[in-house]
Length: 567
Image (cartoon, rainbow, N blue to C red; front, side, top):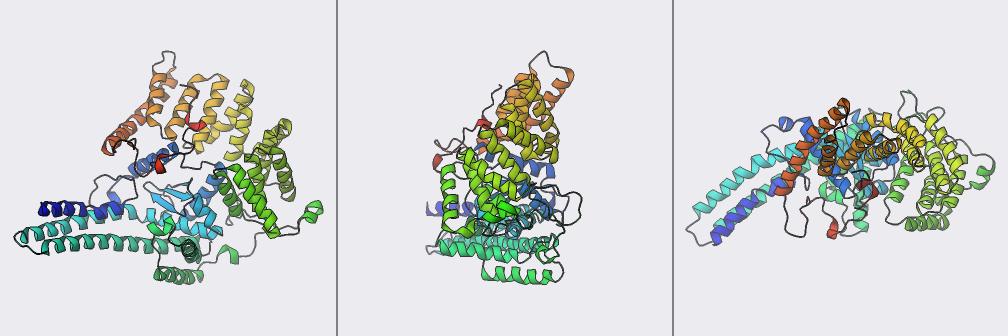
C-alpha cells in the first residue's frame, strides 16, 4: 500500500509543471513538438474569445466604451512598435480590485481595475501592458506548456525506475527519489517562468521606448508593487504572485531602460506639441504621437477665479477615475470618497477628481448636482468630448431632455464614429420607444457594428432599435449575438434555430441565420464537451474553476444585458 501511495504521488508529480504552465482555467489541447505550430491563430483566438464571453457571463468585464477604447488605443500603440505589429489583440478591463494583468491565448489581455487605480502614470500602465504583449508575441504560454511536457515525463519515468530498484529495501531511498524528482520538476517550471518574465521585461521595455514612453517605467512599476506589498504585509499583489519580482529583475529593468534612453527619447523629454488638443478631441492625421492630455492654456474669467489649485490632469487620470467609479459596489460610497477628498485636501481638486465627483453624482442619481459640476468642467475645457458627454447624460437624467438631445446631436456630428457617444445617444433615443427615434438609432449603430462586432452593448442597442423599427428578424439576430457575446452560446444557438424555423424568411435572411448557426454549432458542442470534462462535485454547478464566483456568490449576474426581451 505504501508503494502504491508513492506511485500515485509520482503520477501526480508528473503533472505539476503542466498545471503551473497554464493560466488557471485555460485548457490547452494536446499539441505537437513546436510551440509555433501548436495551434492555429484561429484556434487561439477561439480559446481567448470563449474565455472573455464566459467572464462576461459572470459580470467580470467592465464593458465601458470610454475606458475600453482608451485601453485598446494604448495597447495598439505598443503593438504597432512590437516585433509583431500585425498581431491581433483584444484588451479588456476586468472588474477586480486586485493589482494584476494577464495574457490569454489569441492575444486577449485583461487588465484589472485595481491595477489601473494603482498606477500613478500612463507610462506605468503601459509598462504592464507591454510586458503582457511580450508574453503573447514570444509565445510564452505555448512554450511553457511544451516545456512541461518534455521535462515532466522523463523525470517521472526516472522516479518510477527508482521505485522499482528500491522495491525490496526497507529504508527511505524510494521516498527520497520521488521527492527529488518532484523538486526537480517544480524547479524547472520555476526557472522557465523566470526566464519568460525576464524576456517579457526586456521585450516590453524596448516596446515602451519605441512607443515614446519612459523605459524606466517598468522598474518603477515593480517598485510600486513592492511598496504595496510592504504596506499590506502578507497581502501580496496578484501580479507579483504570477510575475515574481526580485532585486535583480528590477536592476536589470533599470539597466535596460538606461541603455534604451540613449537611443529613444521619451515623450516627456520631447518638445511640446503645438496647440494641444482638447481632451477627447479628434487627432486628425498628425504623425506625432497621440497626446490626449488636457490643454495647458490659462483659465480666464469666473473659471480662473475659482481655480486656485492645480487643474491639469492627463487622459489616463480621467480614465483611472472613471474605472474606479464604475467598478465601485456603491455609487454613494464613491460620492462620499470624492467629497471627502475635495474637503480634506484643496490641492486634490484636480480635473480628474472633479470628473470622478461629477460622474459619481450621476451614478448616485443626483443629476442636478452633476449638471453643475459638469458645467464647470465644460466651461474650463470647451471641446472635450468626455466632459460634454457626461454633461449630456446628466442633463438627460435630470429631465432636461431638450438640452440633452441638442448636446447629443452636436457631439454625434463633431465626433462621428465615437462609440461612447453613439451608445449614449442611442440609449436616449430608444427610451422614447417610437419608430422615428429607432430609425435614427439604427443609423448610428449600424456602421459601428462593422468596427466593433464583439461589442455586446452595440448588439443590444441594435436589437432594440430594430425591434422598435419593426424589423423583427434583424432584432432576433442581434439579440442572439448579444447572448453569444455574454457567454450564453447555447441560448444564442437556440434563438437562431427558432428564427430559422420560420417560413416567412427571405433568401438573404435565411442565409445570414444559417451561416451563424453553422458558425456557432461547433462552439456550443465544444462547450458541452468541456463542461463534461470539467464536471465538478455537486454544489459547484460545473462552471470553469477559474471563473467560479468567489464564495459561490456573484454580484450583478442577472444584469439587464443578460436578459433578452425577444425570444
